[in-house]
Image (tube, rainbow, N blue to C red; front, side, top):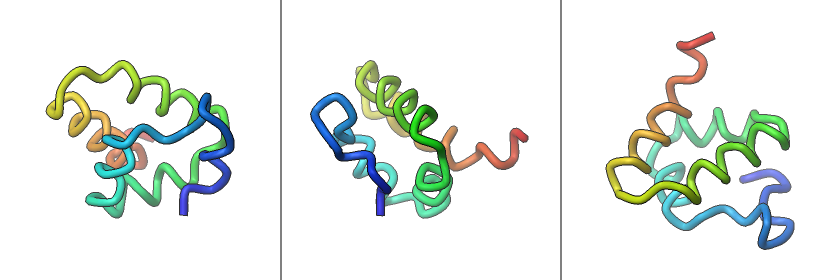
Length: 69
């Protein structure tokens, strides 16, 4: 489902991001369609999140990526 994201600790999907993607099908589809570098950037951003609201905003941003292009 996540492609090759969970290869090692460096690229392991943070739990909050995983839950957020699981709850938002559009975000999950957009994340799955990303290249490895884009996924890495999202994972790093998720590691810097400090609140549930920030994580929700990150997941919403992922869901809305196609609207931004």
